[in-house]
Length: 326
Ligand code: PBG
Image 1 (cartoon, helix red, strand yellow):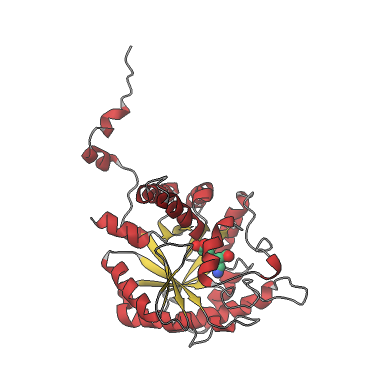
Image 2 (cartoon, helix red, strand yellow; image 1 turned 180 degrees about the horizontal axis):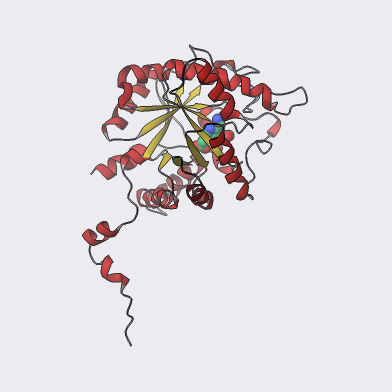
């Protein structure tokens, strides 16, 4: 007896495998997260994110030039200010580091590059939380929304095409949409970190931006509980109803079920954030010779696309785009 199903027929040669592949990655499926720091003399490598840097505005421009050359789909900027305060006012200062960097990229690349701005307060607050604190130390949701509106307008004024609220406050998308429209920025896109989980995988990022949450605190009071799947859909639907143009799932690899759910239930563009800890794990194992780093990166990012994401935010953007272009 011979099997009648012979799937191996289609796997015989690379050309056949390419022809029948259901999912393909291209450089424009990647958005590169980039850090720009105030008061730096030169770019500084982030030790827990090998190959990633805190940039000066100038080194950022150079890096982005290379990313554009290899066809990366966009960049998302994170500012690292040299001073912080209670409210995080550097986040909406027109001369704040993120705004200066956005403006520099817009001036150089114009509409040839999609410039996104992460919209949050944690890099700018002394206490490291994503919102304003009440006297009892809890995060005041509605007071925070007003500040998010100011940040959105400052980023749009600087030239960001996309603002990406990552603070997980209730009603943040609606508040930001309102503030943008009122200031005349009705074309600015909102990419909502819709299903953002309280994850252990953000560690290297917090090194990169110099954020430490006071008193050993965490973000479990606002980011989602990773035990919950249905809740992610509810969060994402609420964001779309409030005007989100694009929704995101974060992190990526441990949440592919969520990516798949959102793909099935929503019709807006969907992305996932392959976060700092996911990148660092691959890099660390590869540095030890335990895995083939680029091969694993390609496998993971393809899986994110296969689960239903249209694009992926990843620190591998430059490296893999260069590889795919070969
Ligand atoms: C919050 C923010 C975080 C990341 C992106 N935006 C950190 C956090 O929620 O603590 C993490 C990204 C990464 O780990 O790569 N502004």
